[in-house]
Image 1 (cartoon, one colour):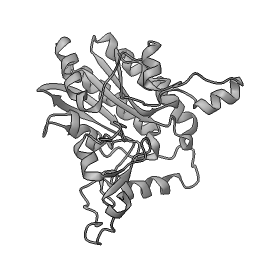
Image 2: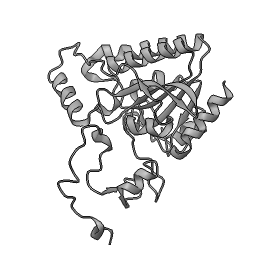
Image 3: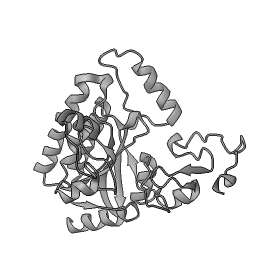
Length: 281
């Protein structure tokens, strides 16, 4: 039985390397797939692009690992790494929670931005990380995206954003909602400059992120079975008092209805991005 395979790991195996993000550590040797319910060896999942080898369920990725999968080794140069999160509303406990998350995950905020190369072609890239407050968009996320767009315009680079988010960050109130307008305005400048913007939607992409920069790509890609929408299905059903179609707000449903250009499996993502970039050189 698979349960017999599971064993406790020693204290030495559970020690944290300070240079490794907590979201990427192997805490234990096994993981359960939420889709097929199979117990999987974590190293096998990791070596399979963090995709279930049994049912092809795409596990959520940290920004660091996502960058390692799509950017040529040794070419990623992060920008605005140490931009500090502020507390514009004096929200009780907010900064303490931010500091605790930073210490626990070794992640500074919900997005990493920088430049790098895909098959030798330089790009500006931003990757959201759901391990930090579920990728919620606050002022730092909006500012880092806007600065990344400025860098893309300055260097005449195509822009790629990997999106994963629960939406706007409630602890920053109207300031977080203003990031929707801010990022959209920045992307309008990118468009005026005639530069390519590729948006990649991963599970989940919801709320204010979906309502702004996530859906503004010249080309919109999505991973299989990703939840993509503004409000959640249950909220919509309760509001409309109607049952929703099967698969509603999944990437396959959005592809069928013209909101997504292509669904790309993780193992094919780098090659797909490279092909798109070559078409636009």
